[in-house]
Structure formats: C-alpha cells, structure tokens
Amino acid sequence: MRRALVASAAVAVALGAAAPAHAASVFVLAQTQSFSPGQINIVTGDTVIWRNISQKTHNVLFETEGYNSGRFGPREVRNHPFPTAGVYDYHCTIHTGMIGQVGVYPLVLEGPATRVRRGTTIAFGVRAPDGAGDVTIEADYGAGFAPVAAATAAVPGPGHEGHDEPGELHADVAATDTATYRAVFSGGTSNETRVEVTDAPDIAARARRTRGGTAVTVTATPASPGARVVLQVNLRERFGWWPLKRARLDKRSRATFVVRGQGHARARVVLVAPDWATPLNETRAFRLRG
Amino acid sequence: MLIAVSATPAEAATRHVWVAAVPATWNMIPNQRDGITGDTFSPEETVFPTVAYRRFTKGWKKPLRNAPRSMVDHDLIPGPIIHLRVGDRLLVHFKNMDTTMRNPHSMHFHGVSYRPSSDGAYVPGFSGKDANVKPGQHWTYRLKAGPDSAGVWPYHDHSPSMHHSLEGGLWGMLSIFGRHERRPDREFVTVFAPMGDFQTIDGRAFVGNTPVNRAMVGDKIQWDVMAIGSEHHTFHVHGHRWRTAAGVPEDTRTLGPAESFRVSWREDAPGTWLYHCHVEQHMEKGMIGIYRVSR
Image (cartoon, rainbow over all chains, first blue to last red; front, side, top):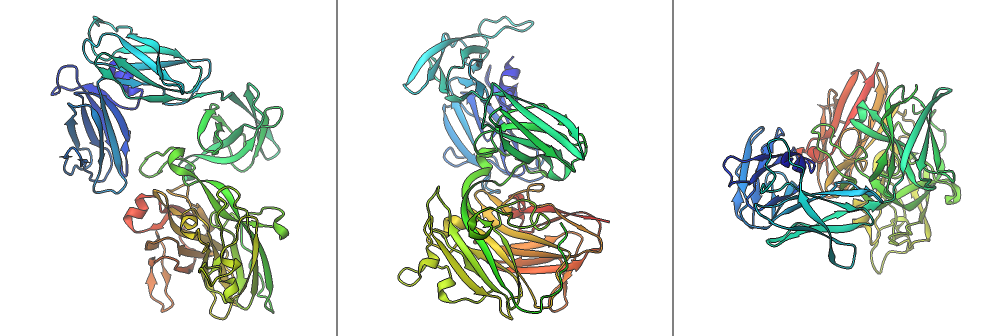
C-alpha cells in the first residue's frame, strides 16, 4: 500500500535499508534537461535518490543547505537524507534551468494530480510517522482552513498487522468545490495541495467514413455549448499526439471534424481549457477510417 | 504545397500587404514533449498569451494564413512571409489590434529602402506615428526593394514595447528575389528565436513541433534562415551541403541577432534528416526539427 500510495504521485518509494526505521527512499529521475518530478514532498527522515536516466552528466546542488552531490553520469545514482522539515531548492549546475525542490514535512498529504469532477469523491493519502495519532484533513474553500474528514488507516494487506505502521492513512472528501487541503496532527502540519473541482463534461466521439476521409462527431454530456475540443492524431513524424483540428461545440453540444489524408491513424478528442492546450477530459483513442 | 515557378515579371510591381498585430494564445510545444529525450512538459510551461502579426485581406476584413504550409506548416508565428522582387514597391498597411495587452506596436523592415516615416523605430522626440502605433490605430509603411535587396530579411516590432514583443514572436520575414531570378520549388522558413525557457524554430520547440519540412528528390530547395533575440546560432542540416558565394562547401553557418541568409541546393538525398541550431544548449532547449525528402 505504501508503494502504491506514493507511486500514484509518480514517485517511486522503497524502504531504504540505510535509512532510519520506517523512513522511505524517494526516487527522482534526472532526465536530459529536467528533474522528474521537479517537486516532491517527503516525510521528515526520508531519503531522496536521484537516478540519472539520461545520456548526460548531472549534479545536484542545494546552495542553502550546502549539499553537493558531485557529478554523476548515465545510470548512476546519488542520495541524500532529509532529517529536518523545510523546503529545499536545488539545481544542476551543468544544465541551466534544470531545477528541483524537495518539501520535507512531518506528514505528507497526497491528492489527485488531475481535476476532479464535481459530485465525485476525492481520495487523499497521508504518509505519517509512527504513532501519529489522530490525523485530520482540513480544507480551505476561501475562508480559511476547517476540518472536513478524519484520516483512517488504510485497509491492511496480507500479513499486515495494521496498528502502528507509518503512512498508510487515507480519507475521502466530497468534491464540492475547488479547495486547498492539508493534513494536521499533534506533531505538525502537512504540505498543502490544491484540488480543482470541475464541471467538465464527459465527451464521446464517433468516427464514420465519408467520401475520401473520416467525419468525427463529438458530443458532450451534460450538454456544453461553446466548450473547446481538439482532435488529436498520433503521428510518427510528430512524435506523439498532435492537435490536428479544433472547434467549439455548437448549440446542440456537438462538433464535427472532417479529416482527410491521415489514413487509419489513431485519434482521440480532448476537451481543453480556454488555452486550447490544458486537457480537461478526453475520449478513448480510436482509428480514423482512411 | 508546391511554389509555382513563375515567369519573371517584366516590370516592377507595387504590392499591398495588409497586416495586423493580433492577440493570440501560443503553444510552443503542442505535443507536450521532447520527442528525442522523452522529456514531457505541461501546458503551464509551454502556453502563453502573446501578440503576433497576422496577414489580412484588404481593409483587415478577413484573416489569412501567414505563409503557405510548404514554407511553415503551422500558422501565425512567424508573421506573414512577404515575397518581392528587386525593384518592387511594397506598401504594408499595418493595424494594431492588440486589444488585450493594449501595447503600442510597429513594423521595422530590414533589407529595403524607405524614408524615416516608414522606419517604424521608436526614438522619443524624433520618430512619428509609424513607430508607436497605438491599439486601434494603423499606419502604412512605404518600402522599396532596391538592387541590393535580394535575399531574406527580418521585420519586427520596434515600438516602445519591442523587447517584450520580440520574445513573444512579433516578427516575420521578407523574401526578395532578383528581378530575373528563378524561384525555388520549395522554400522553408527557419527563424531561430528564444521564447521563455525554450529555444524555438518559428516559435516551436523540439522535433515534431518545429516545422516538418518536406521536399522531393530533384526539387530546387531554399532555406530562409534568420535569428531574432540576443544570441548567436549555427544553422545545420544533416546529410547536405551548400556552397558559399565564394564557392566553398559548408553544412553549418553561423548567424547572430537579426542576421539572415538563404541557402539552396538541388535535392538528391532521400530520407528523414535533422536540421537544427548546433549550439548544443539550444538544441537541448528545442531548436531542432526534421526534414523529410521523398523520392
């Protein structure tokens, strides 16, 4: 459960053999020009391990704290423990703009990475130290923090005693509006995480063959006239999903894309924010019809 | 799209081009990734509001594409590609439609002749309305392509807001042919310019996002290359060479801020090739694209 909990935030966690009891090791990937994730939150006492998955040599420098990893090449790792709470910025001195941040808290709150549809449930995970006692989830809808739920022990897995293991707490909160959340216990306060609640509709696409191409009809439920939708095609020469056409849904909450010259390429339709890029929802991938 | 090989005109022409500075939301990396390293980016990192030059029909009634897809396969940045021949007169009717940031803008042209009233460069106490066109206002720049104008040249905002505008993509290119020069079969626009945290070609970063240029074996192709910003770049195309004016073969050429050149060859190398700035830090930040040659 501990692994699953943190992996959901794209941070791999393993129990660190050299770390204090119950401390975790959290991996950060050093890519060609960036750290991934660029920002992580860990529990006091955890160790961060930087793994170089690029073909470049990198380093990790915390100027304020004074830690310098030294240069490490492809497939090499560097690690550093964080025994004291605080927010620590670092960067690679070899590659300009390659920056990262480690937030160290008495307990860590993890929420969904994407927008949540209003009326659904927000599932939070909490990593807390041994014997944390009562942990409360607080929300700030704009008028200050107030308790909204109690975090409870996660369902124990096979062989798990389920009494005083750190970390495995969770809480469900109704998604009523966008808010900032934190977890609180007698020993301190967690990081804050913002969860955006959206009314973004579900969208569906239907592709049918027309003379010389494919007509893709898009609908939204509930009806959302004016919503922005982008037809994306997965193209080899574009190295991924490529926005081919875009449209606003009409009064009937429909839009039709007519596509020619893309063969049987994989396609999908994405509901996007006003910037025409931030995805709010998407259809499953489907094939164009030549 | 194939560029028509037109017969050279007997007499110089007067060309009218209608251009406006328009607000836009620009995405430097529409596929949200560096296709070579696999690094990914979020729209928060790659999308920004800006102002760009847009070609219009007469009277700014209807927006048009800035360039044929064969020259730049996306639209808006760079601004309109303006073709002339030596001896032509050019009237650029410019309107500032920047209704969001509400900044003044202008157009300043390299490589052509004009009077100070068409310089478009802001100098307090000296310059006129041409250099400081306020939102909702317009100005006509009167230019001439002289005997020494053949080549490719930048134009860009030179108003009080130019430094912010140039990083946002408020620039374009003149492509001027000699009076009797034969036009190429394919012409590719390649503008090196920094944008935010990225290094872009035509306002886009990383393979797949930057223009995918296409040609066929046997085509006479021409690259129109220029740099905007404060850095030097080195234009390089894999698997090809061209000759300098002195007849020296080369496959990489350096250019600095506002410099521009064109290189051309008869295509004989089918395949998918890279073109990029060879300043490694610029490559890593996105200044790279692919060039596909088919038989």
